Image (cartoon, rainbow, N blue to C red; front, top):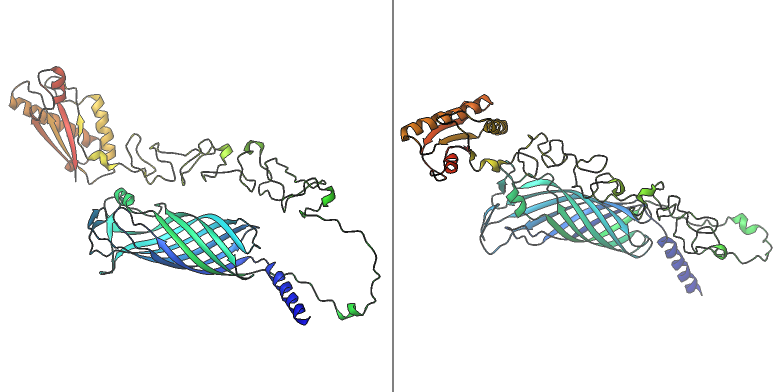
Length: 481
C-alpha cells in the first residue's frame, strides 16, 4: 500500500513537471557539414560544432540564434585547371568556415509534446577562407576589377531546415537538425568565373543537447493548519458540471462549433469570430485589420503575404518576384534610377551613363573594349571631315573613356583603291588625325591616343562596287593598356 502511494506521488510530480513551459533554451551541438567545393575542388566531409540560444515567441513559434565552426580539406586524385589556379593531387587546400545565423521555426505540435517536428527559415553571415596549410597562407583569386584578392569573405547566406526534437525531461531535450545554407554572394567580390566555379551550398546535419529554463511552474499550495481544524462543510448535492471540450468558454451542450481552435475568440454560440473575414479567427489573427482586397492572399497568421520580401504585400504588388535586395516603389516595382537595367539596391555603380552597356552589378561592361570600334564615315571625295553621326559616337566614347583612364587608343584609318597609293596614305593620315582631334576636344587626354593612316590596305570588301569601297573607307579604334 505504501509503495503504491509513493508511485502515485512520483507519477503526479512527473506530470506536473512535464506541464511546465519554458521560454529560453541553451544548447551545444556537433555533426557533419558537406560542401562539394565547386567545379574544381572536392572537399571531404567536415565536423561542425557550435552553440545555440533559443527564445520562444508564441505557442508554436521559436527564434534561434547560433554559431558554428568547421574545417574542410581538399582531396583529389587528378590535376584540374580552373579559375582557382592549377590544382594537382599534391595541392593542399583547406577551408575554414564560421557561420553566425538566426532562424524562425514553427513546430508541428504544441511544445508540451515529447516528440515534435519543426520547419524554419533564416539567414546570417558565413566567414570563410581557403588556405594553403603547408605555407600558412590564403589562396589568391581574381577579383571583380581584375585584381588579385584573398579567396575568402564575410558572406551573407539564406537558410532553410527542419528539426526533430525529443524531450528527455521538462528541462532537457535532444534535437536532430538538417539544414541547407545558400551563399548569396553578398560580401564576396570575386570575378564572375570564380563565382560560377565555387560551390554556393553548405549542407549540415547536427545533433544537439539543449537545456530549457526561464518560466515558473504553477503549483497548488498546501492547506494551512487552520484549514484542517475548521469544521467540515456539509456536503450538498450539486448538478453534474457542464463540459467544454474545446475550452472556448461555451458549454458543449450549447456549442454549435465544438472544435473551435484554441485561443480563438468565439461568439455566444461558440463559433469563431472573424472580424476581417480573412479566414483566420480573431485571437489567432496577428493582422486583425486585413483589407478585403487581400483576401485569398494571406498567411496562416492572418497577415498579407509578401512572397518576394520587398516590403509590399502581394495584393498591392504590381511586380511580383522582384529580386531580393532591390529597392522598390509603392507598387512593388524595382527602381532603376540610372536606367541601366540593374535595380537600385543591387547596383554597385548607381550613376551609369545612359545607353552604355553594364555588367550584372550595374558597372561599366569592360568587354566592349575587347574588339575594335569601327566607324564607317561618309567622307566627301578627298575629304577628311567626320560626319555628324560619327561625331556623336566619338562624343559618347569619350564620356565612357573618362571611367577607364588607364586605357589607351590606337586609331587606324583606311581608304579604297581609287587614286595613287601615296595620295591615299596621306589622306588616311589626315582622317586619322581628325578623329584624334575630336576625341581630344571631347576630353580624352592626347597622350592616350595614337593615330595612323594605313592608306589602301587591309580591305574588308571589294573595291569593284560603290558599297564595297564605302566599307573600305573606315576608321578602326582599338583599345589596350
